[in-house]
Image 1 (cartoon, rainbow, N blue to C red):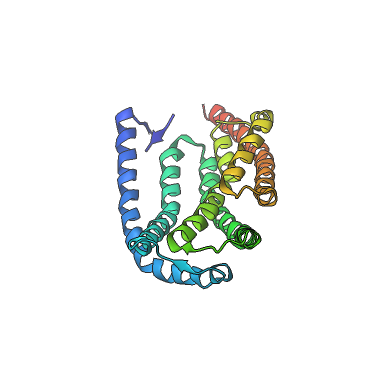
Image 2 (image 1 turned 90 degrees about the horizontal axis):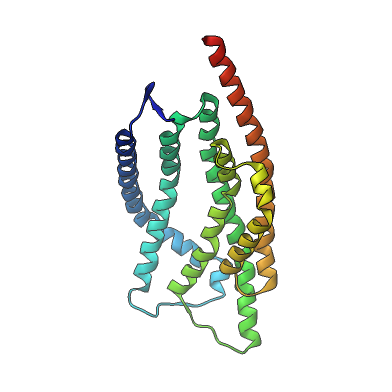
Length: 255
């Protein structure tokens, strides 16, 4: 039951509060997107100077391709800069329904989530992406194919390969969060392990080229993350039970 200033909130109050938080977040998203227009150019130029990009000659097949790349990066930069605010607004919306210690613990998830996101991006960009580019170039040489790469297609492929990893690396934090909320248990996660593995294998197949080694480079870390998530879920589950018992005992003693 969600409380606000010691009083039970009605459904209408919940909707009003959610609307206020969404509008607040949308405003700052627009501000950060505008900031992204200033940051996009140096980031794009930097990415064009990497070893992987220098192996290719990037071309614009349409007059609007450079603009599309520019705007895409501006929106992504805006979304990344807004993400801590989104996470905080989500925490602030549900925190009144949590125990006091749970509020403090779940608030600490925000910096951990950001670190995991950046870690996922770094893993995919510095380890997976160079391997995939090298594999594609070698395959083209073997088939005697002269690749003509579009700048939009290059950055589209880069983003499609890296951004999902930033989101997938959130798995331990998401599992801990929903475990603290009582939505899942470590027993449930262990029970559905084989189905989760199948889903992760499918995700790895979608975001990687049809080649076994790159698929394993993606799927193995995801499976490890899932097992880590189960361990974290067990810890969060035991802690949540202890907190519930402690709160109940304190409430009983105060009567």
